[in-house]
Image (cartoon, rainbow, N blue to C red; front, side, top):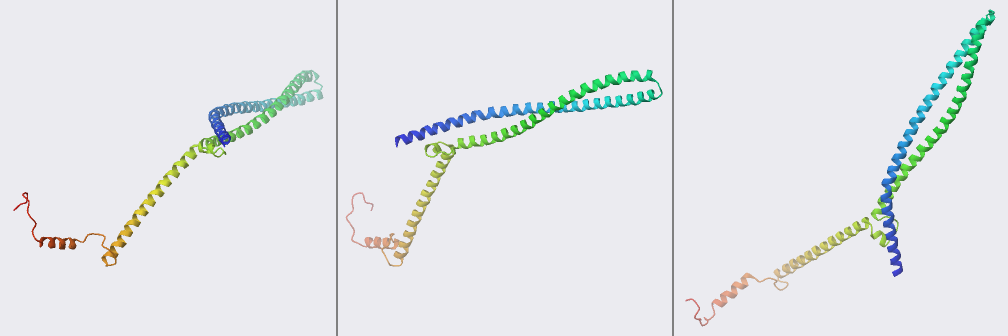
Length: 237
């Protein structure tokens, strides 16, 4: 029996330690979630800026392609008119534009792959942040329940909680109310018994429970008519 009590006490102490640790860890977890949310929001803004940059780069490429097409069309017309002197400088410029287009296209492809990767990371981060928020809410509820004494243990552990203390107080109040009600009921039964006995006595079915004033007056009259008793010096005339 003693070993069982000691085990319960150790369990209660462990529960209290867990409650204290959870209570202390919750503010830290809340702050860490806030910091993670802030960092994720910054990452989303940076990703949005990078995606906007991709669109701008694509517009530049579209402009290079349009310029190459215009120069090619003009150079072809010049060649058809035997104006190679005009077509050659255009060919040089077209070659330079095509090199720039190739470099920009390769860079754009790399940046698009990076953006897709970062998008996946941000999406995963949002999911993890949502789960952290849910976990924090559950942890807060669990800590509150443990602090209230609902840790799932019985005996000594449950009696150490605030809820058990409140339940004990309520039980005492109920017991006091029951005792007051029992007292009032007993008192009322005594009054009812007295009333019943008085009614019976007044009807001539039992001894009188109270002295009859008429009987007292008759006794006084009888005493007044009896021979006078010797007077003492202190008697008045």
